[in-house]
Length: 195
Ligand code: URA
Image 1 (cartoon, helix red, strand yellow):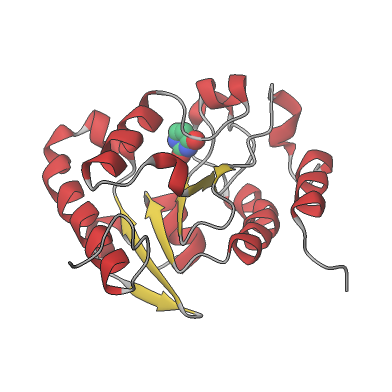
Image 2 (cartoon, helix red, strand yellow):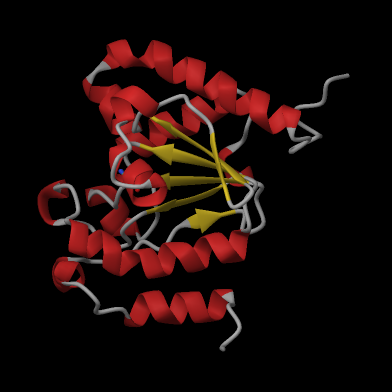
């Protein structure tokens, strides 16, 4: 078996033609951040600004996400951020099941490379792709589940918070739960020490 490496990951994403999404994009958006971060964030798929820049979460939702992380004292550069699908679905529609399944190859490789201890799932698409199709964001957000030794929690997608600001209160609870989990696991000791 070929050893997983970031080089292989990048080549695989760049060469990928497994679904038709790549036919209408400007850039693939593989993800970015600290490649050995204990915390990984997974969103749905690139939007217009992300497609233009080739970077995940750099548009309006990304700016809110940066603020949400800063609110618990976590600089964005200290986490790894990516999406379920690496190519922008036309008009920002939700990616189809076949597109998600095709792209899971890349996401699985990314998780294997980063080896996060905690994953924050942003929105229903990320939660269902990762935790299974029975996941319901309304019911399951804020609830921790451990899979293969990795702690995972679904929360609202920042785009949903821009559309439904009344959800910000529960989003803040989720961010505090995230900070508590990172502290409990002894992660980011320079940021979240008990002393
Ligand atoms: N929404 C997402 O799910 N991902 C991005 O990168 C931007 C917006």
